[in-house]
Amino acid sequence: MQAQDGKRKDKLGTLVFKDTNTKEILIWKHIQSERIDDYKYLLQELLILGYKVKSITIDGKRGLYRAFKDYPVQK
Image 1 (tube, rainbow, N blue to C red):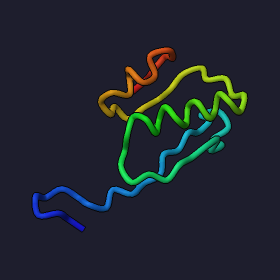
Image 2: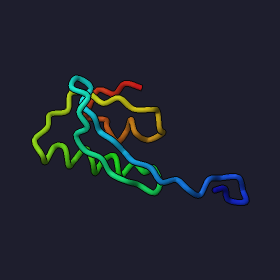
Image 3: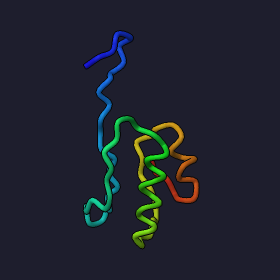
Image 4: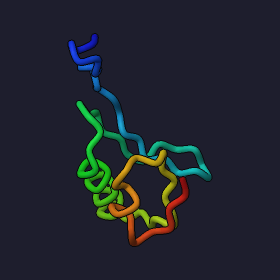
């Protein structure tokens, strides 16, 4: 589905945080659009569950580096 200005309206997706060693999906969230606050929320939930975060790999979305400034980040 496309809006008249050419931008997609169907921005539904799923954010997934995954352990890169075991390939296990640790936590996920369905989203309507990609927001930095959703990433921060999932990170906080992982910490509450007792996970230790050693580093974060991201796709380069602007603002994510600042959101994860306390961790080594790889793009």
